[in-house]
Image (cartoon, rainbow, N blue to C red; front, top):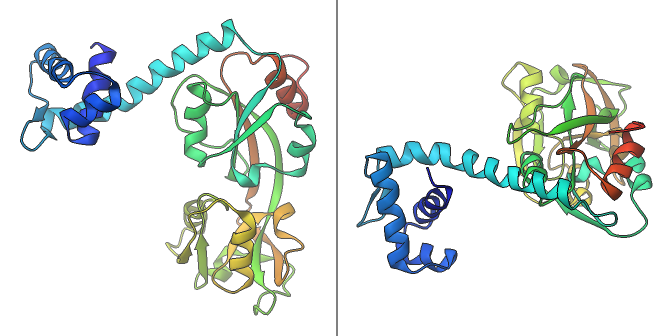
Length: 289
């Protein structure tokens, strides 16, 4: 399949409009119609109904394949460009908020760094497509390597592991305990903050009880807002120890069972150069990449 035709089809299906797709892609509406007709002829099946513009059953199946296919093509282009013209200076780093621990911050170059805060699942794609030179992903591990989306051939290297704590309001009945088991908290109410804290679904899996009920969902990326919500009693959250201690109005109690750690990994494609290579070496201790 011609990727240009496939990209046109995905855009039309997403916008449910030939004219809107033409405007976004910079084509004429006639050219968009020709692209769709050519793709339908190539596959021998109608992909879209026209009024309204909706995918057919065959079109829905094609959409399932189209996203990963187009992403792989973008990743291939970015990989070649990265090798051909790796900049000596300047670095774009895609991160999650809790991946920016003291060690990472100390290793960043003094100038020329752009930080992009993204969702964990978005970081591998950003690195694969060249939107970021490197990615820092983190999460709860047992401890093993993190599970990342398979978007392209990428290399992941461990940067560090740290104990995790449950952040409780200072007046919580468990605030004076030396450690907590997840089973102690099956009836607790939790903060679901996928963009700021550690993944709540990982806690649900680890508990094995189907518990871990969400009391409040926070869709931002600001850690201070998350810790303020926890201190005010709107729900519990699990954070790396370094981010959980010394929060006003809250107490950080270590999570001792199950054995979970906060793991951070650096992600890159191909062989990084320049400032990216220097940061990878600094954080991983590797002498060469």
